[in-house]
Every structure is written in structure tokens, then in C-alpha cells.
Amino acid sequence: MCPPTYFDVVYAINPWMDLSVPVDRGRAVAQWEALRAAYEAHGHRVDVVDPVPGLPDMVYAANGGTVVGGKALAARFAFPQRQPEGAAYESWFATVGAERGLTSLGQASDTNEGEGDLLLAGDVLLAGTGFRTTRAAHEEAGRLLGVPVVTLELVDPRFYHLDTALAVLDTEGRSPRIAYYPGAFSPASRAVLAERYPDAILATEADAAVLGLNAVSDGRHVFLTDRATGMHAQLREHGYVPVGVDLSELLKGGGSVKCCTLELRPAGGPSAGAPTTTEVGA
Image (tube, rainbow, N blue to C red; front, side, top):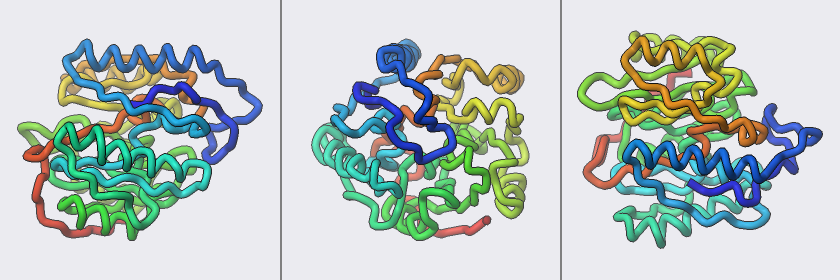
């Protein structure tokens, strides 16, 4: 995670950003601290990346890269306002990350916005495209990280990253379970998701519209915005424990719980060394 020390909305690169709405940075920091405390209270370790002045979106750590099997691929951002973040996260992977047992693969060659668009679901990497990460980046990520890739096309600009429209809930001990909002995807991608994940939780537009799918799960506890009350109820019905967090200030930049969280997967973890193939489902 990266604290929102310099968080602000000073440009608009997604539909959530409104330059006329002021940001309360102190409140943003307090909300971020509450999310960090929630993770630690449930037994999770949080490494903190130092924020860089002039990079107000660096708090959205998920976009900084993708880590699978101890291999860390840093992002290459689409918009010039965020491009320096890629180098900042690459530097962290190569220094502090190396001390944690991670191997830095450098920055992606193609436009690749990290876990914003690349979500590990068991033994495959679900990969979003349509607004930010390119299809070429999917192939590169699969090859470098050693994971099969399933491409999914996003069509609603509100859900500009895959992690705003889909959450991986459980990959341990059974087939992966996900939750997603069908309206965010092209018809062909909806068909792929329905076939691969017939037991998926389908979010309502109301829950998706408050970024209720921008969530982090440890297989039991699901950390998500406290505003997605319908998703909370569905999660309970399926045996999960929702942990609601107020990130309303950071929502002004177009991010919530998952956007603020880059998951570090060590060597020997899920999908390490898996063969690489690419499936295009868009």
C-alpha cells in the first residue's frame, strides 16, 4: 500500500474524477489508515511504499504492478500524468521487494496498469482491456509471469479497470469463485465469464456503481466499501465475511479497496511456473 500523502484530483482521466469537487486529504489519510488497520487486524502484513510528491494517484497501489510466484512486473501507464508511477514501483520491487524475496522483471513494454487489469484467479490471469491495458500487454504478462491469460473486454467507461468490475473471492481448495458486474463487459466476454464461472456472484449495478467490486479477499474475509450493502448481503449468503471500509474520499479519484492494495505473491505460491497460453474472450 502507498499512503495518500499527496492525494488530490488535479486532472480527470476517468469518469469518477471531478475537478470541481474538493478533496479532504486529511480524511483520505484517515480512511487509508483504517483500511490498513483492518488488514492487520485480520492477520495480514502490509508493506508501505513511500509516496512521491507530484504523483497524487500513487495511492492506488494495485496499478503499480503484478506479482505472481515471486516475479514482479511493474506497470507502464497509459496517461502521462501517471507514467512516473511505473518507475517508482519498479524501484520498490528492485529494492525493498527484493528483500521480501521478489524478483523484479522491470517495467512492462506495453501499456499495462498492473492489478488494475490483471487479476490472478487460481491458475489463470484474468486480464482486462478496452480502456487502459492493451491486449499485447496481456501476452507479455502471461509470458513473463508464467500464467495462462484470459482476455476480457470492458465496455463501460465507469469500469475502466478490470478490478472495478470483477473481484476474485476464493482460489484455495476449490474452483475459483469470482464476483462481477455483467454490464461492464462485452457480450462475448460475458459469455466467457458465464461459462468459466457458473457459480459467480453477480453484482447489481447499484453495488458496482459505488465500486463494490473493487475488493480484496483472503478467501474468507472480503474487504470492500461499506456502501455496497447488497454485495455485503450476497457475500454473507455465500459464506464470506464482509469487512466494510469507508473510502469515500479516495473514491473521488476512481478507486476503492482493491485499487489501494497490491497483493504480493511469493515464489511457490499460486500459479508459480504455470505454462503460458492466451485465450481471447472479447
